[in-house]
Image 1 (cartoon, rainbow, N blue to C red):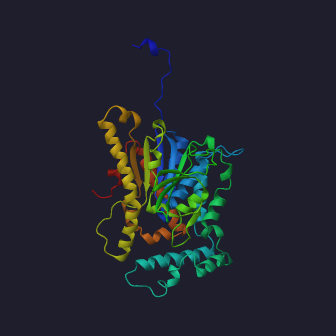
Image 2: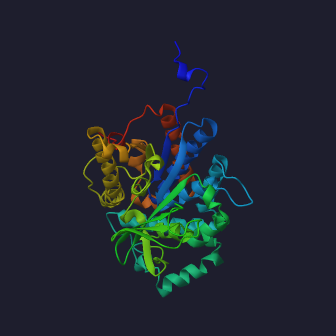
Amino acid sequence: MVDEPTRGKPKQDKPKPKVAVGCQGGGIHASFEVGVLTEILKDIETRNRFDLVGVSGTSAGALCALMVWYGLAPIKNGRAGSPGAAIAQLNDFWDRFAATTAGEKVLNAIAYSAFRAREAEVPVVGINAPIFSLSPSGAISQAVIAGLPLFGVRRRFFDLDDLLAKACPQFDDIDWPKLQTRLLVGASEIVGGIETAFDSDLRMPGGGGKHTKAIDTNRWRRRLPLTLRGVAASGTLAEFRQAEEIDGRYYWDGLYSQNPPVREFLAGVRKNDVPDEIWIVRINPQQSAAQPQSNAEIIDRENQLMGNLSLNKELDFILTVNDGIAEFDGAFANKYKPVTVRTIKMTRQTAAELRYSSKFDRSRGFMDWLRREGHAVAQDWLSRWPDVGCYPDDAAYYH
């Protein structure tokens, strides 16, 4: 029997879940994220099961997140933005990021060998020489960089600012008020020691994509307007580049602070704008099979811990809020909503084969191998979603 008040009214479809995707930093291991993000965008394009309301990233993860966001962004008097455009933007960028010319392949082989040598139990004569640890601001380093184009190395291969400018030529023409997806990029301000997130949110002071003021949510935490220089800051490793200067402050890689940013998707946001789910694409394994023993294992594990522990604190706080909502009624439950956190990660076998040194291997074959892994993992994961595991259990390889 149909109740009188509902007779003749169309059936209300259940709202699609709002999803935000966070991309960890990890150098060339982010090739895995390219495959994962491509499959997520394909799912949106073909099945339309969820709304992608946010992407975030740090370091190489920030590059991936930026390309997705830029492809989805509407351009004034230009394209509307779409999952298809985001897929093309992301994959074209990653293809250009690989060592392509003969000079780049030689440079990549030398750099990768230097990092492999650091992991060796016995020092490799010549490879461990000081030339491989020169300050990027030093005269010798600057002279080497200036001469790279003479050997067929594209400027965008070694100059992150140039790479981003060429990849996002219409950044200043984005139709900011029509954006449907938010971008967060993590970086570390190194003089004051301030955790920094570059944010596309228009509700920052100034609005309209032209905002210039920061929001100081905490003395040691700042939110700045999104710029391409902010993305470059997120990918600035001290071994390779001078600190990125923005408005008199200096920035390094966000690995030291947020990997990737998550808090800003929830803090200071209206309840209806908070994602229902946050998916973390984790490329730094949470666990190791055993206590690291060799030099390579120790270096690798140090980097993995650096990339995971700050993230886990943010994710664990979300779980704490979820518990509070479940336990308490009233104002607390009315103000906040539960957020499901999930992990998308490499297979255990692939994670075990990778080392810190391989984060610097820009060879096309290696990058494509990890990209294929991302496609396969994401296809399987999305075929089972939403009947998949949740954080913290789904971050584990070993129980």
